[in-house]
Length: 177
Image (tube, rainbow, N blue to C red; front, top):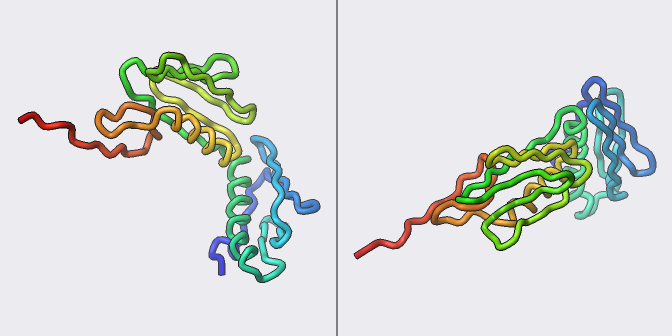
């Protein structure tokens, strides 16, 4: 039995949740999110709570039950408070800048790396910190992971892009005889 799925999701003030034909719509002060879920899980809005339940007892629906509840909880939280991820760019000559709708990264390659910023996200680059914010937790996390994948931190000097709270495991270099 899912511990996350059986707990109701509390809807805060100024937030509306509606379900139409398997599409969950969450409206709040920061925007609106829509998402459809698999047919084996039902979503019901009762007063100021959202309840998620299984319509059939199969392995597939048992696996989805808690996941759907978690996604709806993230949607409700996102329309009330922005999700923020911060990345640190470390290395001599490594720079980041926002140019229009592009994020430009200078990471020691022979060319600058340009990435299109999704319309749903807000990205700022100050000194060596890239800040990504938006109402959809999945979009924020996946864009941050795509940026990090351009130059992962290396273990000897720690050069590269890493999350602000990430600890880079460092290795000892060569020893001289």
